Image (cartoon, rainbow, N blue to C red):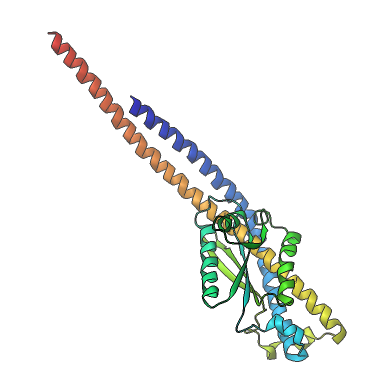
Length: 295
């Protein structure tokens, strides 16, 4: 009978776990709908802003010849120091969502270090930060709670220091890595080079001069304002995109966990019935044997 009680205890435990995973799936499903809508609206704005900053950067580089701006749009072929900013979740139970991001970060770190490039890490999200703390890898900047509740002001403050260090020459490149949302069942790792701004895909001949023509005294203000907005919104959009992907991954993980718990309950129920039948059979045999011995 002790064996039966143990099986009953396991069945009860699995059923309780199943209730939790089902509830988490429903919560993530509801949050995903809101996060997906915000991410889709932000994606359009981010794409237009990225297109505009690329065109402005190409025009400034081509026509102004300003040496202090060339660092913004011209990539150093032999970088000495690279800043990598990664975004992970603050919570777990979302399958391989965080592990995939950290795997890409580690791979990129190894590639840079093998070429003699110093890598400086900055992290957003408790899971990634805890991972590197455990492995005794220093992070120059950390933010916990920002990936769960993206805030434009906090994201702007986080990225501003990295940009200033890049402009001052402390670093040669800034790369942003996060796990992005594709659809409800698919997430993909996105690696964005924030600085220097890439202008390879821009056709300068196709740019309308009327759209980008500004007075010389306003050129600095325009470029600085657009660059600042581009940097701030790039990381803010990455947070929104990552949050939608996180809920998508958690919804899938909890759905799989719920189904696995259901299968385990079935297996344990069959095991319980067999053990119960064996116990009943054993008792019957003992009773019959006792009766026979009394004859």
